[in-house]
Image (tube, rainbow, N blue to C red; front, side, top):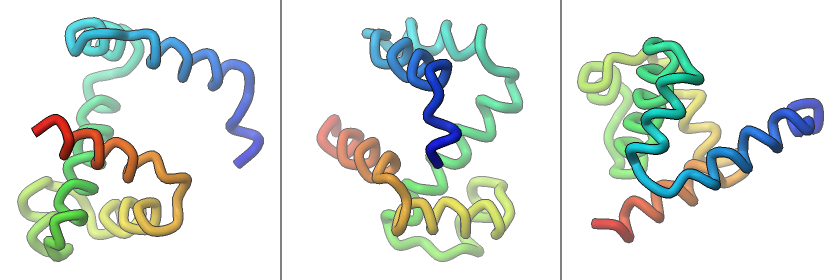
Length: 96
């Protein structure tokens, strides 16, 4: 994991943290990513939300349109990852 924590990745994370509005974030991500990359990231977050709600893989695969391999990867990250999904899910819950 340390090979991903380069200065370029740290700079990207700082740039994301500087964005203050949903519009700023949307504009930056539209310039930075392809539509497919954005859709894939959004699907992973949707998958994490549904896993956190206790939904099963078949429901998630059908509702979100992701493979069970993607669901498994997101599930593994939720349980054993660096805590990024958990932090975002908790913040989204607080926002409601």
